[in-house]
Every structure is written in C-alpha cells, then in structure tokens.
Image (cartoon, rainbow, N blue to C red; front, side, top):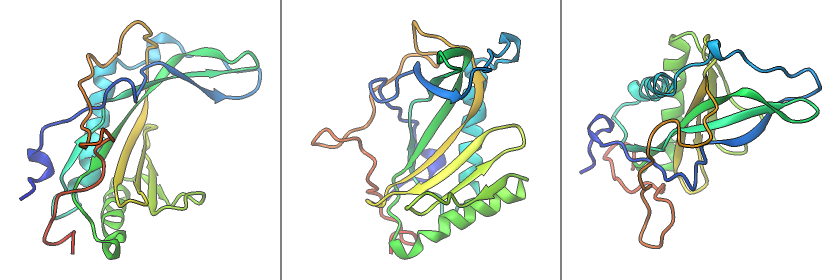
Length: 200
C-alpha cells in the first residue's frame, strides 16, 4: 500500500543529471546587464520556497499522491552579444509522481492543482506548444510552476524562479545523493504505486 506524499522520504537526483552550473541564455541583445548581488536569495531560502510551492501544488490533489523530489538545480543565466554571465542563477526543483493514474483520470490532478493555483492568485494557463497534457502557472513574486503528464504516464511537477548567487566550485544546495533507478539503471520515474481511486 503506497504511503501518502507527506509520509514519503525525500529522494534526490544525482548531480550528473542536474548540473548545478549549466549556463543558459536568458536575455538576448546587447543590453543584458548583471543583477546586483544584494537582490539575490540564499540557496537554502530558495529551496524552502520551491518546496513550499510543490507542497501547495499537491495540497488539494486528493487522495494524496506518492512522489519523490529531484535534487534542486541551479542554472546560471547569461545574455548579451557575448553571452556573458548575468551574475545570478535560477533555482528549480522537480517532483516525480509515483502513483499510477489511469489515462481517463489525467485531467483530474491537473484540474485540482489548477484550482488551487487560481485560489492563491496565480496566473494559470495551458501551454499552447505542449503536445502533452500540462498546466503552467506564475506567481505574483515571479515563481513559475508546471505539471506535465508524459507519454509513459509519469507526471512531473516543476517549480522555479528565485535568483541565487552563481556558485561554480560546489553544489549550492549541498552534497547530492544518488537518484532512484530501476533494475536496468534507468531513472525511476515510471509510476508503480497502485491507488484504489487514481489507478483504476
């Protein structure tokens, strides 16, 4: 019998899959400027905010779903003609749902999460470009949220947003622990927990 999400231990991803300092282009053009360090959020505070957003996203999804959390990621932002560092990284984290959800019920967790987001004043939309069942939201303080149901039935909930310092010599969130894998070594994201309501 699967345990509810609140009772599951946090499981995290290995750094090989979530490099802490990968650089992505955030701003085009030649006028991209660095962000003052005083406006950056400490990594531990950013992680606390991400976990709160993920928890809130599932709070109204009942019966409770089982899950594991990916290791938080730090993505350095760059821009301008020379693709220079903007002096900050964005923090993000994914939650992987392990409760099997019957295809006929895919819309239900999306609707429950969407209603919760709207009640909190978030801007909610269905991504137009996504070929998969999905929902996205943005918070008034600049965080982004998404829920995507993939072809194999696995569900990912993502949260991102806070600007944190660029740290290249170590992972800003601590020492990563091994990610869960299946017997053949693949990342363990395919739902296996049977639930009387969700799985049938």
